Amino acid sequence: MIALHLILVLDLLFEIFTWVLIARFLMSWIPSVNYQHPVVRFIYRVTDFVVRPFRGILPPVGNLDFSPIIMFVVLRLAYSLLRRILVMLVLQSALGG
Image (cartoon, rainbow, N blue to C red; front, side, top):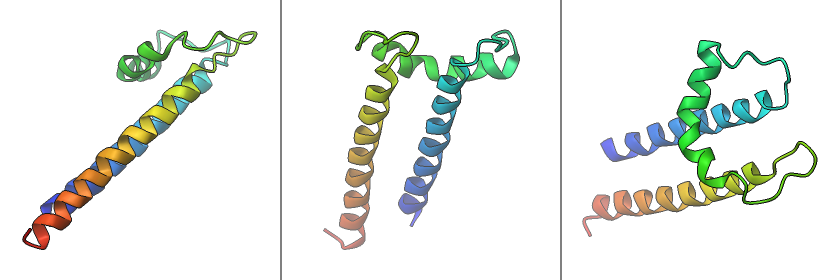
């Protein structure tokens, strides 16, 4: 039962992180964002470790960088795989096997 709660917490954290990433990319389209604001600095600091490896994978078209699309697909696939493994482990232990 604790393992199921852990999976639910991980789902929630992943969803929150996804929305923080979306906020980061939306802010990048707004020219008047104050990058010194504490909330903006927090968002960039929390997400930079994920964004940095994907920067420049695709060349920008105009001012738009499409690398975040690759990042979102990779993150979704990786989390989906991790979640399936966790669910299988929980079910295996629940069934005694």
